[in-house]
Length: 445
Ligand code: SF4
Image 1: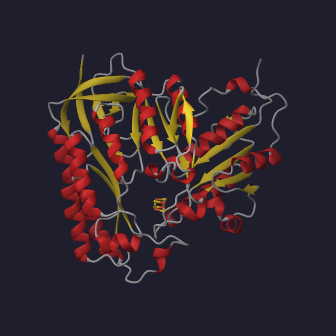
Image 2: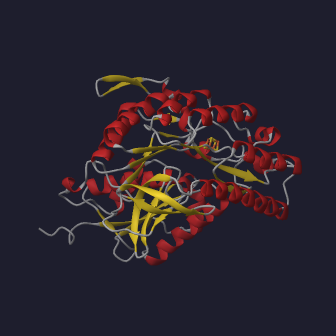
């Protein structure tokens, strides 16, 4: 039976961060469950859904351009996602959009689709795999544990767009993880705005999973995911964690291999005065001590972070503090952004904005130091045998990642001989060379 002639087709343009990608996956899962087809390009689509990002002004411009492109190429466009929270910005620039909905408004998105492209009479529900549709390769998946954020960092408008923290029930999250592992996922990437705050909003409400009561909290979540790791070897990578004391509880799980020895902690800065102006919730001195203890317990631990240079009021001394702290904390992987005003963010009205050329110079110095630290780390691995998860096979061999590398944001491991390898394979390889981001390795059989 051919279904493609009768199924309405929706094109999806997904912009922004992994969290937006998860929203797109959920929308696609709903569309497929109702019998819609996903069109691979503008021309084949009856309607295009643009999932936007509105965090930085540059991302807003990118989103507005993407909406314009979809209108030119297809004409029938529904907009959702972060920028959708400001409908007038979109409709002023693009009055012909069919509908605008905000972030996580799945019902409203589906209502808009139903209005402009009715669902087929006979949905092919069985076409939807139990684990839903995913936009990432088959062997890794993002696991979103909460929406929103209770912090109020002065440079960020996410809480005003996405609201306060709303945690998912722990049993629902663990069931989803279990299904993903059953469907062949080899790596789970835990994401949220503030992973270590998980459960705070629901007072750590307990639910049963696998006959055991678990609280909706960070430690119990990691324990549950650790059980899956013991049974299946699945990697669990933790993103957007803050260095609160309870993160210590996860160190034994990292030490015995249940959770990957990797923490993505968005430090943003180290200087107390800049952190105060940023309204960040951490004390960097205590953090350094904590990192030292973590490394003593889990020597393999890799820290990834993101930083902002040129924040309003950042002095030369603040910036030097940041460089010193970076060395001291030995941040293995770091992204660095030059401060940019975000419409609606409190930091825009702070005094003493840093001139662009100073931001530029600081950014280059930061990146040079970071490259040096990463290069030293890579070189120290030469001769060692590491685990590598294969992502793809190309004409030059296999491309994978070590436990220290998150997809899209960290480095890769190149393996010349790809004989018999497939994406999703987990192999051992001996490192032969390394630079500031990537490794080269030979397979150990
Ligand atoms: S922790 Fe701060 S930067 Fe992150 S989402 Fe919350 S308010 Fe924004």
